[in-house]
Amino acid sequence: MKLGVERWRARVRYLRSHVLGRSDAPPGRNLADSLSTVLFPSDCRVCREPLLRASRVPVCDACRGLLVPQTISMCALCGEALGFESIRLEDAPLCRVCRFSPPPFAQAVAFGEYTGALREMVGLFKFERVAVLSRLLGEKLAEEVRQMPGLSRNAIVVPVPLFRNRLTERGFNQSLLLAEQVVRVLNRRYNFRLRIADALHRVKSTENQYLLTPRQRRQNLRGAFAVKDKAAIAEKDILLIDDIYTTGATARECARILLREGAASVRIATLARTQRDVAVPWTGLVRPTQSIAGTGSLQQNQGLI
Image (cartoon, rainbow, N blue to C red; front, side, top):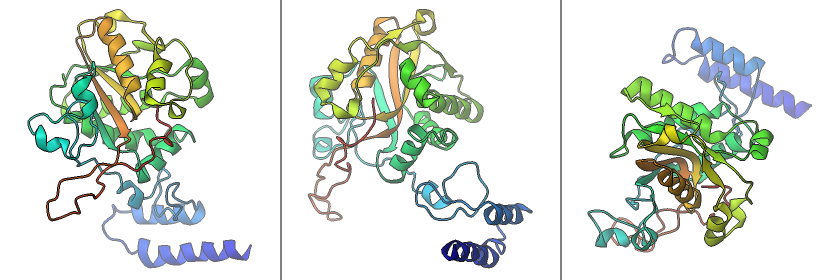
C-alpha cells in the first residue's frame, strides 16, 4: 500500500514540475494530459514507464520514437540483409536464395527489423489483442509502401488471411487491420487509389510456422491458400500485406496462387522482417565483423510469412 502511494505522489510531483510547465502543446492539452495521467495512471506497455499524456495507444512517445525504418543494404527482391554480397552486385544486389531461386513476387519490403520496440509492439498488437496499435503501425508501413518502385497507384490490396479457427480465437485479422491503415494513409495523403479485396482465403489450418524449418514451412503451406474472387485480381497489380516476413514461405505461396489465378503482378509489404546476422566490408567506421542486422531470434520469432 505504501509503495503504491509513493508511486502516485511521484507521478504527481513529476506532472507539476514538468508536464504542466510545457509550452509547446496546444492550449488545454497540458491540463488534459495532466488530469488524465493523475486520475487514470497507466504505464507504457513496452517500457513500463508511466504514460505522461492521454492516448488510446498504450505506448509512450519515447518508445514510439524507437520505431525506425531499416537502413541496411538489402536484397532488391526479398529484403534480406546483405553483407559482402552487396559489393559484387551493386546495380541489383540479390541474396543467395533469390539468385538461385527467384521468388514469384516482384518485390518484398518491410518497415523495420523484427526486434526491440517493434517486436514488442507487434506482440501487443497480435497476441495481446491491442488492436488500436494498428493505426500507429499501419502508418509506419504505409510510408514504406509509398516508396516501393513500380507500385501501381491503383493496386489491389490483399491481406494475408487467417484460418477461421485462428480468426475466431484472435477476434481480428492483424493483416487486414494493417491493410486498412495503409490504404487510408496513401489514398488520403498521397492520392493513391488503392482498394482492398477479400480475394484470398485460407482453406486449411496449418502448424505454427515458427516451430518449423524453412523446408517444413514451405510444405506446411502447400494447399493452404486459394483465390475466392478471381475477378477481383484478374490482370491486376496486387499488394499483399502481412505483419511479419520470416523465411518468405507465406509470401511465396500466396504470390504463386495469385499469379496462377490471373494476377498481373504481386508485391509484398510487411510491417517487420527477421534479419540474419551479416558481416559488412571494412570501411574504417565499423569493425569488419560487426553485425549490422539480425538478432539471432529467427527460431524464436512468431511470424508466419
